[in-house]
Image (tube, rainbow, N blue to C red; front, side, top):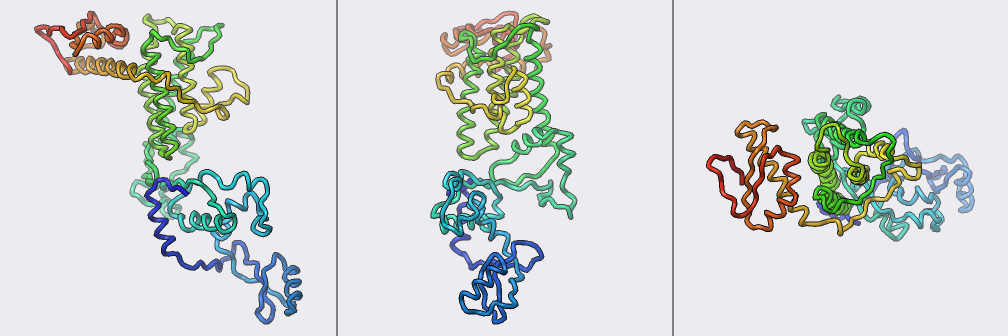
Length: 429
């Protein structure tokens, strides 16, 4: 059995190396009553009913009148430790013969729980699994943290420090709350709850929805659009976006395999907000105001957006499914919920395209910083000189100069290793 995070392995080992006998009886008013029956001589048998107990007493030539059942109840964990078995085959413990469901589902893949009940539940399920089934009950245990208040206290009714979840959902949406909390919670760490996390999640939901609205606003009436991933190989922004999606798929898959959900959601967040919305959409916009994105480009953008919704769905299922159903007409069996997870395609992950686009991004950022430093209006055209280490880099920049010219107001652009600095200039390295 693997623990995630691995640090909890030492806690588990400490418990097991110092294990003590387990008293299974509890003096409570509720619970599973202990199925032990006593006669007048304090002999006892275990039986489901009084009639069954009486027959057992008779078979042993013991007194079978005035029987009484044990007044104690079983410890809650006494029934819970059989959970991996009893949910599929309640009779297995009695018969020793597993039914088809138990054979199919046991052991299960993952258990998600809190470290506070590691010994009460997790360890005892493992013990019961090996004792009664001869095998571990699950392959992995993922331990989550607890949502606490800003002071680090556990939320409770007596302290009055727990927000109303229904009110939060009405204010920020279920997806927004989930997103905000996942974003701020590394594996196994407690989460000091702050409503600003929900605001962050809601803002991201709005960003995703507005990106979808922008794409649909560019659809011409009466034209049939078919989202696809057929990129224009001469368009660096297409190649770069395709590579970033593949890069993110690989990263998220690795994070899922290692149960780092917090890292996975950050990768998806950055891909959607930073890459798709802030860069790809800006480059996809028509040069002239009032025009629509060309059909072929929009089909590719919609194809990319569908991939983004697949990556987002495990974290924000409602908005991603809503958008998925609106991108194009789909039947129930084509819902995002049952669609295949995107597969990594290494042929679309071009490291050279990623490096080149990163260089162009840095140049755009530098130009914007210079404007801010010397207080030049974004609309004022700049005369730009870029000195490169070699001619190959210069040629690559000039080939894709449209990225710079689309995102910055540029009057003229000179690029090369021999470019000389003008007498008056502002620079960035």
